[in-house]
Image (cartoon, rainbow, N blue to C red):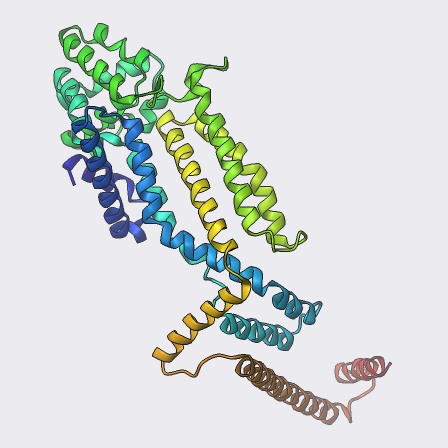
Amino acid sequence: MYSYSLVLLTKNTSSIPVLGPIWNLIVEFLGWIMNVIYIGLEKMGIGNIGLAIIIFTLVTRIIIFPTTLKQQKSSRMMQLMQPEMKAIQDKYKNKTDNASMMAMNAEMKALNEKYGTSMTAGCLPLLIQMPIIFALYRIIMNIPAYVPSVYSVFSKVVDAIGGSSGAQSLHDFATEHDMTKILSQVSNLGINDPSKFDAAAVKNLMIDFLYKLNPSQWSLLPDAYPTAATVINTAAEEANHFNNFLGINLSTAPSAMGWTPNVYWIIPILAGLSQWLSSELTMRQNKAMADNDQSQQMMKSMNIMMPIMSVWFCFTFASGIGLYWVASAVFMIIQQLILNTYFSKQSDEEILRKSMEKANAKRKKMGLPPIDEKSVTKKIQAEQAKLSNEEESRLNVIAKQSLKTKEATDYYNKNAKPGSLASKANMVQLYNEKHDKK
């Protein structure tokens, strides 16, 4: 990984110290993929960030497909288990005592063993995907850090305006032309905290700043730096070439183009529509779940909220992020259609059989006997008997302790003087006993 990338990684992993090393490896690997894709496009004479993002998104969706498949299988198993899960929940409905709760958990655990799954099976793939998704955003937001040929375009401009020593003048230029929002995204070019950023880091921040400028903002630079006008104009043409995708500059946010409908609105609209369709296909896969099931109701709410959020985010972020969002949703739709077709060709019995075979294969390696209906029933009965004995023992201990307390109280209160504190305590005890009897 290039030195520029290392500066960015060091700066941006402070908020996730636990995932630091893993995060670095993921970002470096995905950044390498992005660079390979862009180099390949350049050799074909079509070096374009938009095409690179689309291909990059496809590659990453293929990489995480195994986790997606595992998640879908887990979801299908949960659907098949739903009637039995509901029966267990109904059995212990309105029972909040400790024994009932433990018994319900024991039955749920045995049920998961029966089907060769676990309550966390659907969450694990999501946990695996999250660092990858965050890494994707980091790469797309900082393309120059991972694509040397793009980096070199902006590096020439920075060198022409004085290198890192020109950070203050570039900061003044940005402030004068109302670019403070971009400055905030690049730590104000390190001006506010010079001890934190060395010369190399400041130069990288300046390159980040230049990459985020739209064509109209680039047009202001030659007047601010007349001696570097030729280098700036050349870089502006190159940046417009590789950042232009179907007439949309990927470094420009649709919101920057105003509220009058324009070509930049295509990305947010496509993001909302594709997100809605993706959610609909996912819900169709989960149609076996009851309409009044809490998770199904949550999915319906998300199917409304997520498209709206997609439109808003893609309207406010740079169009490159929006393009990734749209491409990701489109590939997810294609993937979901394939998965829906795959699962529709498998009967419930076949899915259960494969799941049981896989679970029993694991148990065999661990030296455990295979799971069958009878063994699960016996295990549930054994757990219930164990819990019943534990509860009975607990009640016996409470009863013995209550008897000892009563005997001690009777002993100390039997000769209590009228009106004394002990006699009053005795009266309270008698009242409580009388009240309990009723």
